[in-house]
Length: 309
Image (cartoon, rainbow, N blue to C red; front, top):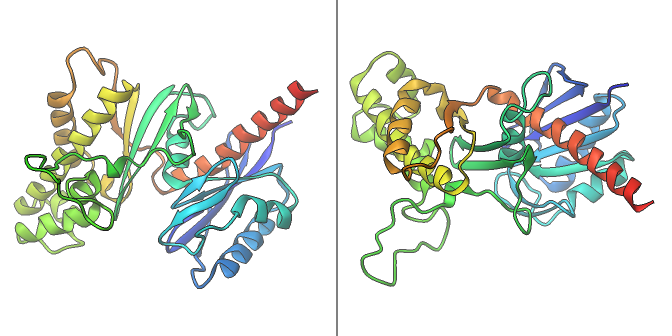
């Protein structure tokens, strides 16, 4: 008998909810995110899950830094969940197991598995290139979260800092100067595009139409992303690096220069099996990954309980 699981992907503007039956992900239902208060957002989450029907467990992906063991939101910018014990609150309201994790982490988990639920990349690093740069890491088919559950903030790796004279440049807020997010996000793309006389917000469409300035802007962004990819390959030697997020719509216009720079900056002998590809699931990666999160963690809880006696 297959498990029926619910995945919820909470974004700053939209919330997606979908049911995973075995390996089948059913149609995703999308709603505008309630951002007026934490109470309204929690109530929306509860109602959305109840509307999806009965389930063995729920996985929730949020654009936040999450203490995974407790499900408490440590840091949250775009949604009002700062310091909310979301896992505990939802478990009490819904009466079933709930698991909460970072949205890019959930997307990375989704990308490591195919549509039949089979593991296709044991070791995977994902970059999500949108307004900012997020990241997720899968090692041995399982999410890597680090000591406190906060990994992997790949957008905040420093790829272009001026370290010639201390104290080194530092900002009072993030992203820091020289970080991958400051140099290679969708926001950075708009700044680059302005230098090439391309209207912000229309760079990818213009590049796909062959507009030279837009193509040059996408290429520069791709090369900057390639430096971040090289760092990931040198650190993890993964089977697969995937690029997701809105900017990935540029396809090979972005990926080709990214691969070239990654190859140049990866140590010889490292990453010999690494492939660099566009993410497969697009906007469904978060909700699919959230449902897989519920499946994996529910199984882990059951195994732990069985071992305990």
